[in-house]
Length: 461
Length: 116
Image (tube, rainbow over all chains, first blue to last red; front, side, top):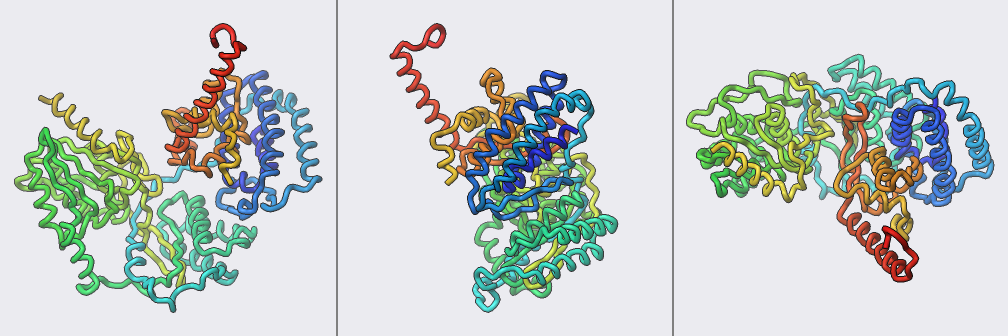
C-alpha cells in the first residue's frame, strides 16, 4: 500500500524523470521500506521522502529544458498511469497547488498508514529479469551491411523524412503477423501482439516520427512482454534487400581476400615467457577458408603450459570455427550450447584432436565489451564448463541472432525460431553479455591473465 | 548544459562521486554508502539522488555499466553506475578545493579539537 502511495507521488516529477528513473525511485523506496521497519524508522522514511519531494520538485520543474519533452514510453513502469509535463513548459500553478495539497495530505496520513500497513509485505518490484532465452538467430546485420548500398542515393530516405501513421500501423500489423506465424511460443506471440495493439490504442506511438526510435520502442515492448531478449525490431534507413542473398564465390571473394591478407584474423600467435601460449583472434572465420590457419595456430602453441585466448577485439563469426577451436580444449566430445542453432550432433566438439596436447592445459579468455556474438558463444561455454577463466570486461551481449523477416523497405524483425538446449541455470549472453570471472579493465586484461597464469604454473610445480 | 548544474558542484553530487570511488553501485547502494560516509547525516531521497545521477550521467562524470541483480536485495535487476576518469578528476578537484578551505579555516584558528 505505502509503495502505491509513493508511486502516486512519483507522478509529481517531470515526465522525463519518471521515464528515466521512475521505476528505480520506486525500487529504492521499496528497498528502504523493507530495511526500515517499525514506527520510527518508517516515520523517518516518509519524512525523508516528503522533504526530498519538497526540495527536488521545484528544482526539477524549474530546470526543464525542451530536449526533455519527448516521450519515451519505453521506460514507463508497469501498471501506473503517468501524467506528463510538456517539456518546454513549467507546470501550471493549479498542478503545483494540487501537488502541495497532496503532499500535506499524505504527510497527515502517514501515521495512519504506518499503523495499518507499516508491517504489510510489499509486493515485489516488476519482474525485470529476462527469462532464459531458448534459441537461435542468424546474422542479419551482416546481411544488411553486405547488401545495402550506401552509395546509391536513389534508395536513401530523404533527410528528416518522418515516419507516418500508416507505416507505423503496417509495421505493427506485420510484426504481430510474423510473430504468430514464426515464433516458437504461439501463446506468447498472441500476448505480445495484444500488448502492441494496446500500446497503439493508448497512443504510445503517436509522437514518434523517427524510425530508429520506433524500432527501439517496439523491441523494448516485445522483450518486456515476452522476456525473450532474442526478439528485435530492426530499422534501416537504407532499403533492406528483397530477399536473403545466397553467398556465391563472387560475393565471398572480398571476404576471402580480406581473410587471406589478415592471416584469417589470427592477429598474434606467440609463446610468452613461462611457456604461456597467447593467441589473439579477432573473429571466428569461415573454416572452409581458414581451417588450415586455425589448425596451424593451435599446433604452434601445442607445447604451451597455459593458453590465453585474446578475444577482446573479436566480433564473432562462424559457429563451426568456434567448435573447431574449442575441440582442442577437451579430451572428449563436449556440448557447446549455442542459442542460434538447434541442438544436433554438431553441438558437440570433435574432441579429442589427434596429436593435440592442449586438452588439459589451463585456459584464460580475455574479454571486453567489444567481444560479441561467436566470441560470446566460445566464452560463455568455456566459462560455464569451468574450462576457462574469463578475464576482462562483460561482453557485448550481441542479440542479432534471430531469423530475419523483412517487413518493408526499412523495417524487419528478428525472431528466434530454433530450440537449443541450455543446460545451465544462467541465461545466455543475449543483451546481458557474459560476465568475466576476473573483472578488470580491458587494457589490463592480458597483464592480469599472464600474472594469474604464472601463479598457477608456480602452484602446480 | 548539464555541467552548469554541477558548477559549483552540489554536495549531493560530490558525495555520490565519492561513494563510487572503488566500487560500482546501484541507486540504493549509493544512498547507503553516502549515508555511511556522512555518518548518517545525508540520506539522499530518490528525487535528489536520481536528479544528481542524471546530471552526472549527462556530464559523463559517471556511467551506467550494466543491469544486474544484487544478490543481497532479491532478484530485481538494477542499474549500476561507475565513476569515469573525468568524475574521479572532478572529485579530486573538489576535495582539493575543500582542503584549501580547511587550510584557511585552520589558519584563522576557527577549528578546535580533533579538526585542528
